[in-house]
Image (cartoon, rainbow, N blue to C red; front, side, top):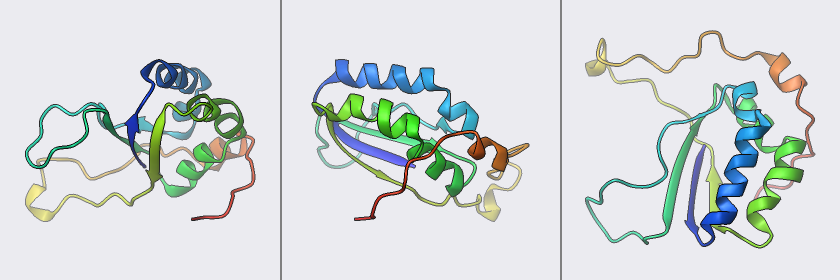
Length: 133
């Protein structure tokens, strides 16, 4: 999952992030951050100073969906950054690729041991998925 946006209200976003941590949704669904959303360097272009890019890894699409459409996230946490907006964001989900052969022995292929099972999703109340843009 890639969360990309322009931050407008850091205090509001900090309250959102704290509520997300306190919810326990990421641990329950095997999700975790792969990066710090603040860049450390720019090699090309002139990105906005308030740009934020965060990559969240989940074990599978089902767990990413269970997070996003959880009642807890949609009804309690997400509104903390929307009303009023803490910024403008896009959230997309992408498949993770296995390392190429030349990286064999240098990095581990993407894997979860053990992967969270269907019970993890079953215990999280869901909202109905809305229409896709």
